[in-house]
Length: 170
Image (tube, rainbow, N blue to C red; front, side):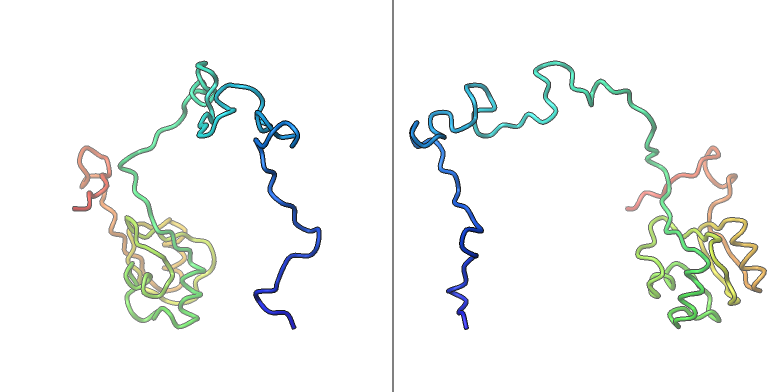
């Protein structure tokens, strides 16, 4: 039985590190395989994307799009996921379901700016759910199962100048 301090790789399976800059007889002397002169022959080179003073390609390309700083980000929940959580006993269909209940049941990871209910899958349980927003098909499916959907999203007239503003967290 071999001991831990006697373990070694198989004979010939590993090769020693090339020692460079040890004279012309070594085959890797003088410039150590780096060529001659210039920035790349030295250590500490950081020229990724640099094109010798020419405008780099990533800066020559046209810019597209816009990132809205006020855009709301939702935790999306599908109907099948709700039904799965109810069947597993993680959610109680008789109690009111909101973002906190979904978080506690592990249906969503974080609340973000609110929960949005989507219509993928089938819902058999009668539930009363309160979410920030819900699609028309999701509302119809919940009401078909005998439940109700309450949305907390502000109506256009409530928002300043017809735009929905993201709440700034203090």
